[in-house]
Image (cartoon, rainbow, N blue to C red):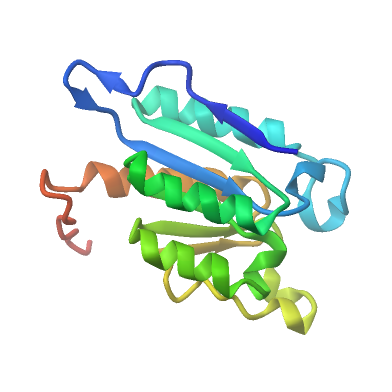
Length: 176
């Protein structure tokens, strides 16, 4: 089952494109709300997607969400992200976190900055969940904060995009 939700407004704003954030959800996340609520909470994937799209609309950013249980479909979506001029990715690779070199390679090939999100604290769970194939490529990792982790990742993405210079490089933030 593919879940895709985008903000209603066109990504065109006059002659300039609105920033575009792609949120990718990996396998079994379509079961959120029912699946192991002790680890993953009671929010459904639709709840999370509605919240993210709403936050994007309020910030003038196009937020697109996509869930797939199949690795190849997620990889294809990453390849399309370059063509679609996605500016930032928020990804919960789910079980692929610990297994997918192919998904890692696709993220590396896009060169699109991303934040890795996990609903549960992967470091407080089974030892095989402690390793991520993505964390060293990510600009940040949010783990163990439930559905709120997605919101924090999007908040960071919005700040990141706001601080971009017109040529795509990052302004340096001064420490306070």
